[in-house]
Length: 257
Image (cartoon, rainbow, N blue to C red):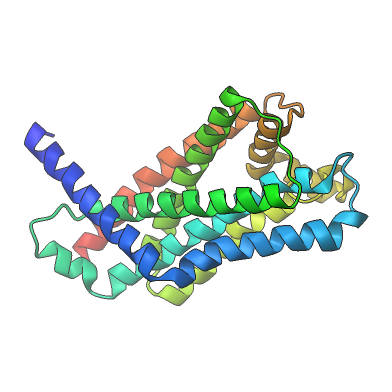
């Protein structure tokens, strides 16, 4: 790519990102859902189920990393709906007739989703601190938390772009995101995996959410991390690369339809 093409690619991507950011603050219901639902889940688990769940530590400290992951999942799932809406609603066809790089549409959704997730995660952190969450992380560990969460956000954002490009209507886009949103519940997010049946314990231990949550728990609270940080980077670094490549291929196919 020449310098000129790179310049216009960056400018187009920024234009589409600004469009997505405007939608976030105009469509406040999606932002409220991305924030309100994880906060409601956290309060319900801490105050309703927390007294009956033994984790060896205060339950609010145990559950917050899982709630943060759930928050990111809800926020990112909106991307699938937005991408599908742009494809089937005629907006993509309008952009094709304009002097703009079509793939910047995907970049805009990813960056907009990242900002929405960052805002929602910050609010969830603040609410968690208000109800008793007590992290003991130092500066480098907080930077590690930000880095791990950023990798997770970008990887799932591109995954949901893929979902949005795969389907033909918004209703299907909404349904196809459900399995991804369900994964944190079958991990160490809300209960220790040792309490699960053996067949479910094996799945919970070896799916990508568990090393991610254990890494965040270790960075925030000082619990043992082991190899979980390497597993997390392998899982979500790989997901980011694969999702980006698949999204690019699917996008080119949709252009030819």
